[in-house]
Length: 109
Image (cartoon, rainbow, N blue to C red; front, side, top):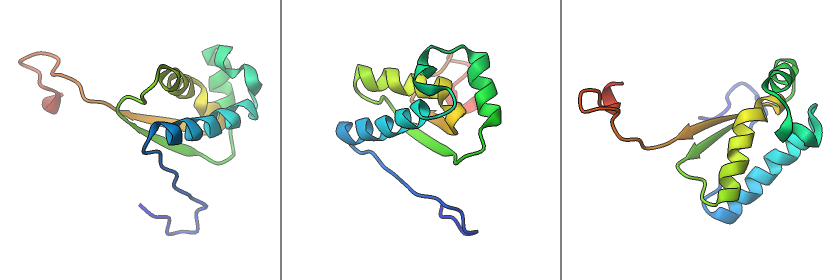
């Protein structure tokens, strides 16, 4: 998809661990500098939800395809998923999963 109505958009990719670490560090900095401040990982859901409702700045959609890799990246992406909306950061996480049951395959659920 490309912006066609003058939107200010950019695309950043991460194909390897170092790139993924750099991209997540950029997003963490946005949260640290946002309304919740650097204490955002320890705030309750209500505080995050309130900041997300009041957010008027740019929005970022992160598409995470599979396991981020290292334990640190998994923890950071989990925290971004939980609090990122406060700074306009939204995650879509893609993952392969087995069928829930033989009578309920993933393709049909």
